[in-house]
Image (cartoon, helix red, strand yellow):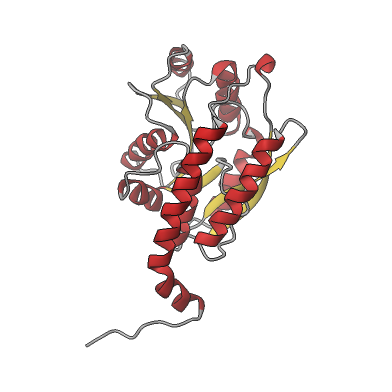
Length: 257
């Protein structure tokens, strides 16, 4: 497989369990290059992935000494991607929930619309916990509210292609977006920046513990994080409201002389 000079797969990873190696191998079977950011993992997966990378020039493993959260890991990967000259990253989780088989289609969509973010629209099966489905409906409605109706089909599904430059600038401009709030806040703030949105369907699977599945989601803690995040974003939306409404109405202010 010829390596891409513009698009790479970026996989943030924190104690992902037994699904990490199959996930990375599945991504490598469909794309080159693939980078993994090991975010302070203590379960031995970092060593296993580093060993895998030693025999695979298309795989790179970046190590963070302490766990900083998904957004912090993505930031580390974005900075390295920019230095290496990449313009886009497809972010996917290391726990096997995200569909590696969809990587080529999402990359093709990004190549066709390089200024856009390509957002996964999750197609759930029977493995999806009902409590998670209810929570994401509220998050999706909130994301559309604070963007005044941006076409965000799903605010929490982390299988996405981002243009590196606007996402990196967004992360560097705020101290937020470092942990569980990354996926939802990233799509809102990029929509505020005027980054176009393309939604594509993608299947998602939740593995049980017996299947090697690992979840770091904590229902009360993480929903409180999301609630606080949307309150912040709502305040930000109010500050942007006059300009946003003017754009929606097609009004462009005349330059002052």
